[in-house]
Length: 298
Image 1 (cartoon, one colour):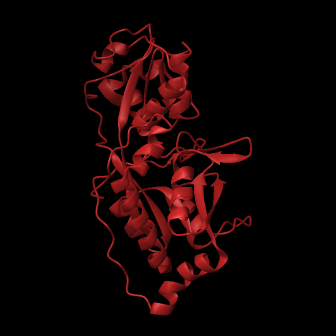
Image 2: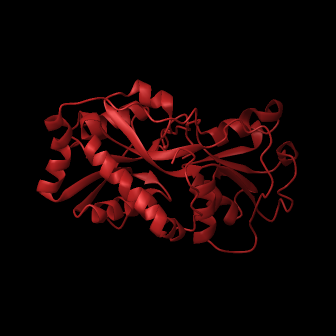
Image 3: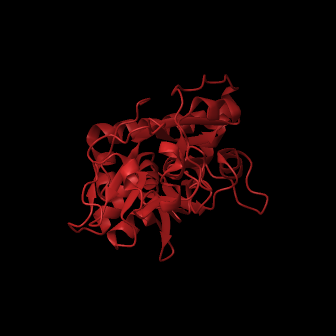
């Protein structure tokens, strides 16, 4: 998912590209399960010594495949959690389905129709009450980051603090079918509609500004920070003030396990808490140039 509270579909969710609007953030009530069924998934992980973790295949800086290796914040978090519980992480990159429900079904509780083997946990799931209600076969837990939005501008738009409507006539970059995209297409009476250029992801949209192919970008905070970290230069600067009329306040990012795997989920959630206290989670984010922000629901 990217800025997706509509779940993206473009590469990485980036949910074709969904952009999830964070709603009220509350944990779903735990369902009472027989002790044996509840413990079995954790027992399986310990028996095999492997934690299978699903991440999006094209969601930089969270997860992407490079040189045959799955890289990114979510991939590194998965490996760190596996280390904490004493097993090895097998990080599996998958392409997003039509929506978050399809992704949860294919990766966590049923498996894909084309033979995708179910994983023990899926990363980068919006910690959203409505999603929890609609997907009761999984438990969404362990929120580990609060996502938001950022705007950056290049040389051609030296003042990034102007009201966005004044960017009319500039080349604006956004990831297709995301909250950022919808904002630029519809805000202020649609005055910016013809100025929007679409990219595979928000990271790539920010790269376009760095390369001088676009004048300004609106994307998630993590995407903008990571792209500017990877391509350091003085020509691009971030907007410091709030983005007016942006209807999404941000959202928490969490993980999901199958509903009968709550003991595993509890253990993974505890590892996130521990890494938060000892600074390791902040260090993992920093490696990709992203400033860690604590989840509101944590």
